[in-house]
Amino acid sequence: MKKLIVSVLATSIVCAGITYLEPLLHSSTASQPHSVAYASSSSGNFKDVKGHWAEATIAKAYAMGLVQGYQDGTFRPNAKVTRAEYASLLTRATKLGSGTGGSSFKDMKGHWAESAVNRLSALGFINNSDYPNGFKPNTELTRLEMMKWMSNGLVQSNASFKQAFEDTQNTLLPTPEATKGKIAKAQIPYLALVRGTGIVGGFADGSLQPEEPTTRAEVAAILLRYIDVEGQEASKYADLNEMREVGTTGTNLLTISNYKYTEGDFGKIMDTKMTLSNKSASLKLHHYIVIDARNSKPRSVYSDLFIDPQKGLKSYQKGLFLTYADITFTTMTEYSNLSVNTYNNGLENSVIGINRPSDVDYINKMGINTIAKDFNNFKVIGKTTSFWTESNIDANGTGYRLRVDNNNEVRFNNR
Image 1 (cartoon, rainbow, N blue to C red):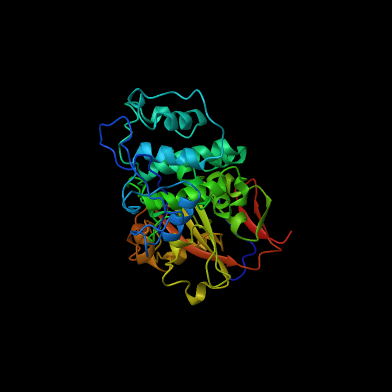
Image 2 (image 1 turned 90 degrees about the horizontal axis):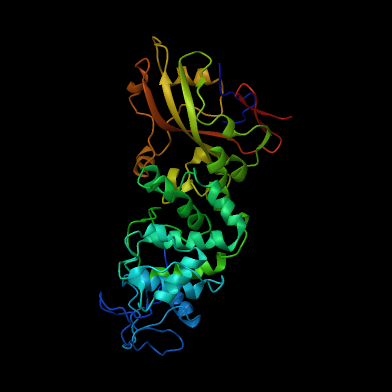
């Protein structure tokens, strides 16, 4: 019998980016840039960015030679960016080598951005296999493309990012699009690198909107962040470290809390069938997310998935490590007085508890499935359902060790 037991359990964004456009305006069929006169102001004080959220960012990007404006003194911060335009911007931002020998796309022959695209291809920013039908340089750039190119650049800039990319293959992205199943598995590590390093912070609702186009103002802010991250050590970034641990073990326990393992790790029991001690049900644990609620502001890259940032922590959540378990649950026995307590008793003070999260409406909006309020799904023998539960562990876990033994039991003890 496999069970999850605790022997000692104390009290229980607006995203931005840059845009330099080589020929900021050109016809959709032109292969050479039109003659475009750019703004000559050394301060980058474009008349149409006054009061814009990216005003200071655009001025900084202009001063660094990353972006330019138009002859009429405008920057057009909300204009969309094409693949060719972004390629020109990214070649200005990267500190990597000159890049030679990149495969040229047939439809880039003679195009004004041909050298930029070839360089990015040679350096590994652009995977030619992503564009089997041609580069189509005048196509509006999606945010996914933008994030993927930058992630490829990070991987090329430092071996630690290559390892981080591998570690996040199976991670949980802290965005509602991921919890709602709208992000393909193959896209996850690319988004994890830019989200985990803060290059892309997400919109106010936490979404990354990978399929949407991006604007000149957004590109300016994002490329400035990229410049700061390229070539750094991946381990410097706390949010990325959380996602790496989740990707390799299923939990962020070590990254976010003061608990340590005595032996084993959560990766050993993830997706393994465990039977409750009273034979009432079996379960499989898929993710175990910990949020540090010891201070007024919850700490974790995942906090906004479970805690409404507008409302903050509830009084009973403060001072603890909040835990959220993603489980698949199968009933085994019919009890005459079936209740949540039946299953919690079978868990014997386990690391997880069969409890509904506190703010169900918010969590459901974020794509997190919770326990049905009427509990009917648990009254059918052999019924399998998946949901997230909420529990907590004592914040004073310094002396405790989490032990995963050969019987797949998980215990807190003070050895």
